[in-house]
Length: 311
Length: 280
Figure 1 (cartoon, helix red, strand yellow):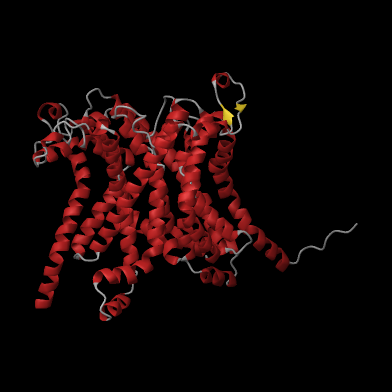
Figure 2: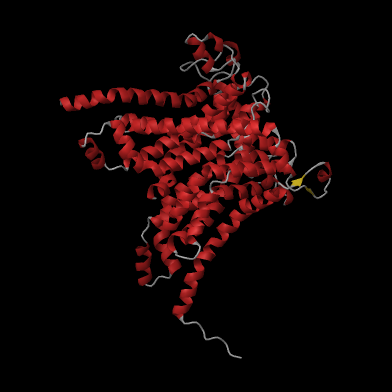
């Protein structure tokens, strides 16, 4: 029996070099697995189980295979909520992108004092805690004391005197929700797009102008391709944020008539799981929402994977 | 002279438009402050008036005398500081590994960071709640902080990696030539330069935890102390014939510190957020 030769200093340091990155990643990975990975796996398992009366008295949940998924997919209310969520997401994310990019282009054309004023204003809206923002907007559209109705009535639309935005119908409720979301998320789009625009080389723009391109064509053919990666990232982030929207809708629902008329996927999962105790159904719903997210953002993930190879 | 005047005239319309939009965007915040300074009974009698009027700090005093506000403030501070401390420490380790070492699985790791960042709390809270309740961590600072660590970690790693990338590795190498160990070189050379990045990232993580509502609502559901956003929500619901001045004063007390902090660090955040996309 013989002991292995003691590692030479050079070899020891090479081994250490090879092991160090994994050692450094140990703690952060463990924490993320604990907080996100394990619940994710557990949720997948729960989505195949049923939690009923017996489980409240400590019985282990019952395996039901795909039953949860089947009953969700055959429930017409699920499709109503999903359709509503998709329309809400398209509207809110679309409006956020259009207004945000418009503001970024506008910021390039104003004097610097005005630009700083606008940027500061946007930062304030961006930073406002979401529950405070919803509280403010709930007051502003309040049917008795709301300034929105006062202004609308003031310009001659007297039908809005005492109009109850949150209880009138699903559309006006979601319109308020969308406005809260757009107000808070446009600033990031505007500021990030403006930052990307300032990276576009002046010489490229001058060359385009010398070639006789007008503003619209310069923007479309020269500027857009350069800032496209930023725009795609921002658009995908908006889709993710708006599809899973929860605090705004939950808080507005407290002032609305019925939750079933106003549910989006986020609040539907909450009311099913936390309110109703149907953990299995709620887990299956959440998995379906995740799947929807993956389908909608697949392109972005592929772009990121390519970047991951490069960086 | 005439060129400058022409430029000014060409800018007049965009300037007015931009100021108009700034006014619209600022209005809700102005309205919050405005309403919070009204005498609370007056809103129901004569409606809301706009500044200037003889304002009163009554609504603020009302909130500040409410012990549930102070309990929630304490809860928010404890949860946010614990989450940020743990996340910042471990994210620094990850950022150094991803930025300073080339190892098998590194590219996959970078992609994983970006993908995990997209997982919304709204898609996981049911099983996160079940997990914490199994460990008796529901309604605790520790349980909620753990979930916040998971929420902010990917983004913090991503931002910090950008900051470490921007500090040349040559500096460390020359310190090692001078006789420093690798660890010593990192702590003496890179770590001090990383300071501003750590502060900006830490503030960001703090604000996310401070503002978070969904998980706080689910995890702190059964009575006891809650964080400020949940407090504000129940304060609003607890009123019969909503005390708008009080609610707006509460909103302002939560929002104003955030506005100040955020304004200071936002430049680094916006650039950190899009850095990856611009590089690609």
